[in-house]
Image (tube, rainbow, N blue to C red; front, top):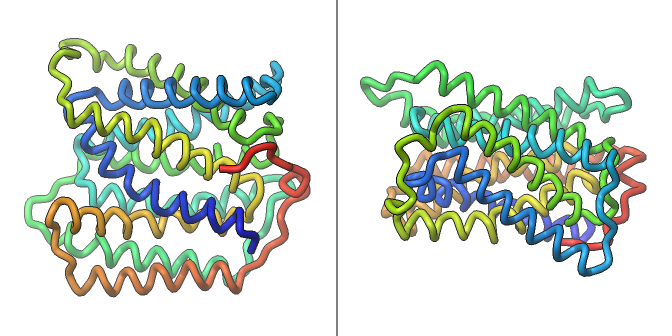
Length: 310
């Protein structure tokens, strides 16, 4: 595997695993959809202005339409719904549901015209990884007495999985700017518009006092803007154009491990034996997918040569 791909995967694994904590802190005093709108608006502006100054071409009208579709599927449908759902769904159960994204990704890629058909190794690896996720967050959460899942929260998380997978697969054949960071910035800008519209329509800003926003939430938002969005989402966008979908989808298995370790280091959360077992299973599935499954990259992905890398 190329060094660029490994570096992008490493950034995706570590950065997106840490954003769970960042989002939790940010939405303590900032409405979920609005916090995401601000996050991606600022991140998008930074990337677009930077890339334009570096000589990258601005998106064409058709490319703006493509980035609007992808940006709203990934950021409004994916990130926005997860942030909203975590107000009523325990984070562990939410992580378990979101861990099904790779399944949606493989299915969406399979039914896409000209899409890559997964090998049996990829399917086995994804299923084994899901078992690891269930061991990681399932038994401990479901065994708690009195846990009642909000049906709207569960529906939002499942919708987030579907929308994120749809946007990811669509992006592989969409007409996008050649510079991956320009494409990322444009997607963030268009996604932020959808997020602010939903924020206004849901009325989450009614009664919200900006003066009451805590320093913790501000720090969390700054982290999400700089590290979570620019580095994390930038790496994801690049990988979608340059790596097999089954390989990219492994981030959903590694991110929870990173989140658990951060909870142990910064929130004094215990590391139980089942967590170590889940870690071994999940990492094993990632290695299995990476070494045994080598589907061909689609023609359009092969033709993409980003001007910048993350």
